[in-house]
Amino acid sequence: MKSISLSALLILSIVLLKANAKTQTQTQFSNDMKEEYFDQILDHFNKQDTRTFQQHFWITDYYYKPGCPIFLYICGQKDCPIDIDENEFLLEEVRKFNGLYIALEHRYYGFSQPFDDLKTVNLAYLTVEQAFEDIAYFINWFKENPPVPIQTAPWITIGKGYGGTLAAWSRAKYPDLIVSSWASSSPVVTSPTVANYDENVHHVYNTTENACSYLLQQVFNYFEYQLYNTTFIEQKAFKALFGKDALRLTQEEMLFYFAEIYSYLEEEGRAAIECSYLMEYSDFKTVIFRVIAVMSDFSPRPYSSYYLSNPSLDWSSGIYRGLGRQQFYQSCTQLGWFKLPSKDPNYGIRSQRLTLDFYKKLCKESFGIEFNPTPDSLNKEFGDFDINAVNLIIVTGIEDPWLGLNLLKNKGDYESILIDCQGCSKGREIGLIKSKEDHHVIKARAKVHDFLVRVLL
Image 1 (tube, rainbow, N blue to C red):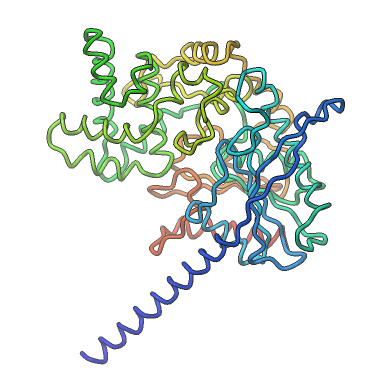
Image 2 (image 1 turned 135 degrees about the vertical axis):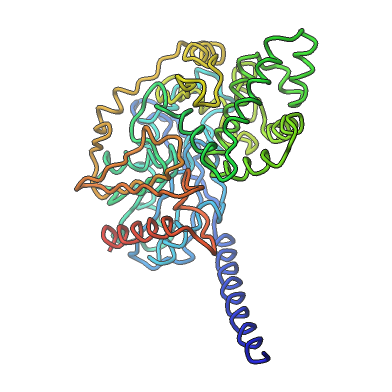
């Protein structure tokens, strides 16, 4: 017994030492990250306009050896904080390749603000085309002003969600600057709406161990009843349960708020956790208060024209999770990607009141402009689902509700990986490395690593 105990103790000590070493390395990597700015051109398509703004980026050469790959992470529609867990596998690949890591913030998000406020006239330079040029200009600027010797180091763009879309398209647009791209859970086409989004969210909530999609439907139906079938005083009291900011939301905007938060939780791989909590309760009243408590952790401001129309709010604050005036402006004017309810209300969690007309009205009230996304021009330029790029890998989780706009078929020029496991939603492969990992995730990460070896070495 004594020898077994000593052996077990030795094994435990080794595991703890490895875990501690990993944690120390991550901490050192994070501490070495430097926050920088450079002068970015405001309008790349008007040579007469010489205005610039300070674009924000993070950089670390902690693992870097001259000539090794440069990993350029595109942050997308959010600020660019350093989150080791969110990108842990990516950073592990940076280590393996002795790479230089840079995270570039998108114009108008985080600290990369061209103007003092977000008036509609000032948002005119918030386009995908300007963002492309930002990436190319940054790479060329960095080559001319390298903080470390980079020689002929190959550049790879990486991103998650919309950031991954930019990464993939930038590879297609600038093959002379970017040798490869890795897009995680990223739409490759633009469209006014996201096909089957609500159905996909419902399906995931319905297939967890403690399936709760129909319970969520009951809760949201109850909420809708409170908003439309009670007195004004009762409606106001109901909205107040979600905080004072919710009092400014219209009935439809409240429904939008409900659907978006629980869709976001599903996108983040938290459907199983939320269902396990809800299914613990035996009475409906307790379930309702549990949902209200969850909702209250998220600001309702990004879902209301009252707040979206305010250009002076600090929309770059982390409390909005990248949502807000900038993101909604991009949807109204170019990207679309609005989420409609399921055609069959039995297979969705969104209210049937959240039609395309609702979003058109929200665009008009928020910006004073008509709803006019222009997806066809981007789809035509980049080949729609037959994307015009080589050395591209796109990874998608089976529980990502954006599946309808993601590339799910392999072609000779690019590789597409679908991870089929519970909890495999948005950005699953790029993030946290768990001690007990699903074998589908392990297999997907191995394919990503092999791909990077093939295109970078």
